[in-house]
Amino acid sequence: MELTIDPSRTALVVIDLQRGIVKMPAGPRSPAEVVARAAEMVKAMRLAGGTVVLVHVTPSPDGKDGLKPFTDAPVQVGAGAPPPEWAEFVPELAPALTDIVITKRHWGAFYGTELDLQLRRRGVDTIILCGISTCVGVESTARDAYERGYQQIFVEDAMAAREAEDHRHTVNSLFPRIGRVRSTAEVLAALK
Image 1: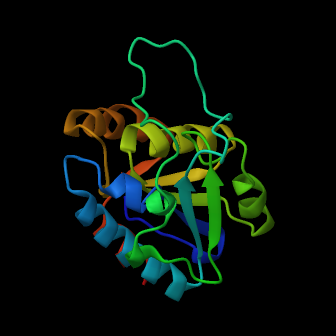
Image 2: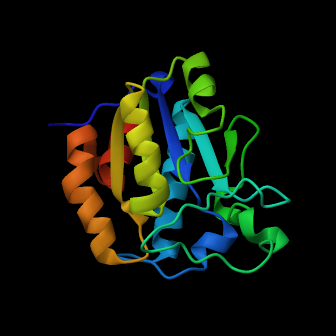
């Protein structure tokens, strides 16, 4: 099915393409590839008059808002607060005045933020998702968006996870159930 996008009702939501996260290993593609494709889509979305949402994650200054459940595979967190530049967006994705910037404290971009409010105020009913990590921040945001009734487009080649297999699992088993999986080229073509 050919992809059609109405920029006036669509937001490109870019997840966690920030200095601290893009330094980590990723697959099936490098963080640099993900950033380059996201930057192409951000430029195209701005030109088309659509909404760009840049999301980054960082703990609160005192760190007390971090989740601490008992798990079989605990998330490894460094000692102390991350360095000051950790949550800064990469230079290729510097926010424009018209962009929405969301700071999240947990995996998903909806939980505890004003993302839903800002999208609804702008009449957005469709989101295009990309970023790192496919199976954490992107997937958590996607599940919340689905439960809120948003149409979703997942840009498979503008995402990566810690492990390539984790990326493939989410893209192949979850995303087709809650939206449409497409490529950067398909999204760019639909925005022209």
